[in-house]
Image (cartoon, rainbow, N blue to C red; front, top):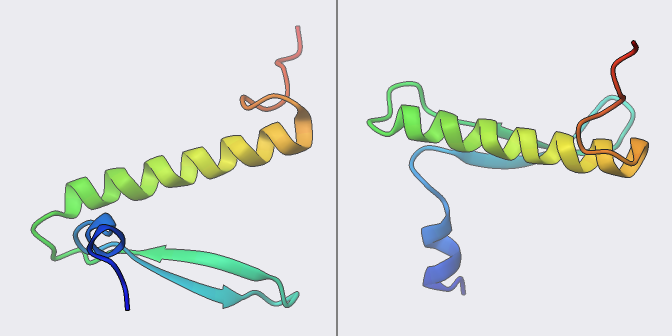
Length: 72
Protein backbone atom coordinates (compact mmCIF):
# COMPACT_ATOMS: atom_id res chain seq x y z
CA UNK A 1 0.00 0.00 0.00
CA UNK A 2 1.41 3.40 -0.95
CA UNK A 3 1.75 6.17 1.56
CA UNK A 4 0.21 9.59 1.03
CA UNK A 5 3.63 11.25 0.91
CA UNK A 6 4.65 9.14 -2.05
CA UNK A 7 1.45 9.60 -4.03
CA UNK A 8 1.28 13.35 -3.38
CA UNK A 9 4.82 13.67 -4.77
CA UNK A 10 3.48 13.25 -8.30
CA UNK A 11 2.38 16.57 -9.64
CA UNK A 12 -0.29 17.21 -12.23
CA UNK A 13 -0.15 15.11 -15.35
CA UNK A 14 3.50 13.97 -15.19
CA UNK A 15 3.71 10.21 -15.63
CA UNK A 16 6.81 8.06 -15.45
CA UNK A 17 7.25 4.74 -17.21
CA UNK A 18 10.25 2.46 -17.21
CA UNK A 19 10.89 0.80 -20.55
CA UNK A 20 13.67 -1.07 -22.31
CA UNK A 21 15.49 0.55 -25.22
CA UNK A 22 16.76 -1.27 -28.33
CA UNK A 23 19.92 -2.36 -26.45
CA UNK A 24 17.81 -3.86 -23.67
CA UNK A 25 18.74 -1.20 -21.11
CA UNK A 26 16.13 0.08 -18.72
CA UNK A 27 15.26 3.73 -19.43
CA UNK A 28 12.87 6.19 -17.80
CA UNK A 29 10.28 7.94 -19.96
CA UNK A 30 8.47 10.98 -18.60
CA UNK A 31 5.27 12.12 -20.26
CA UNK A 32 2.64 14.73 -19.57
CA UNK A 33 -0.81 15.67 -20.76
CA UNK A 34 -0.80 18.70 -23.07
CA UNK A 35 -4.44 19.44 -22.15
CA UNK A 36 -3.77 19.49 -18.41
CA UNK A 37 -4.62 22.61 -16.44
CA UNK A 38 -1.16 22.34 -14.83
CA UNK A 39 0.72 21.91 -18.12
CA UNK A 40 3.20 24.78 -17.57
CA UNK A 41 4.08 23.58 -14.07
CA UNK A 42 4.36 19.99 -15.32
CA UNK A 43 6.62 21.01 -18.19
CA UNK A 44 8.84 22.94 -15.80
CA UNK A 45 9.03 19.92 -13.49
CA UNK A 46 9.99 17.56 -16.31
CA UNK A 47 12.61 20.03 -17.61
CA UNK A 48 14.15 20.45 -14.15
CA UNK A 49 14.32 16.68 -13.67
CA UNK A 50 15.95 16.21 -17.08
CA UNK A 51 18.55 18.91 -16.38
CA UNK A 52 19.33 17.40 -12.96
CA UNK A 53 19.76 13.96 -14.54
CA UNK A 54 22.05 15.33 -17.28
CA UNK A 55 24.17 17.19 -14.71
CA UNK A 56 24.53 14.03 -12.59
CA UNK A 57 25.56 12.07 -15.68
CA UNK A 58 28.11 14.75 -16.69
CA UNK A 59 29.54 14.75 -13.18
CA UNK A 60 29.86 10.98 -13.26
CA UNK A 61 31.46 10.86 -16.72
CA UNK A 62 33.46 14.08 -16.91
CA UNK A 63 34.05 15.16 -13.32
CA UNK A 64 32.11 18.40 -13.85
CA UNK A 65 28.35 18.94 -13.81
CA UNK A 66 28.68 21.55 -16.57
CA UNK A 67 30.27 19.16 -19.05
CA UNK A 68 33.50 19.66 -20.90
CA UNK A 69 35.23 23.04 -20.52
CA UNK A 70 35.03 25.39 -23.50
CA UNK A 71 38.08 25.51 -25.78
CA UNK A 72 39.94 28.80 -25.81
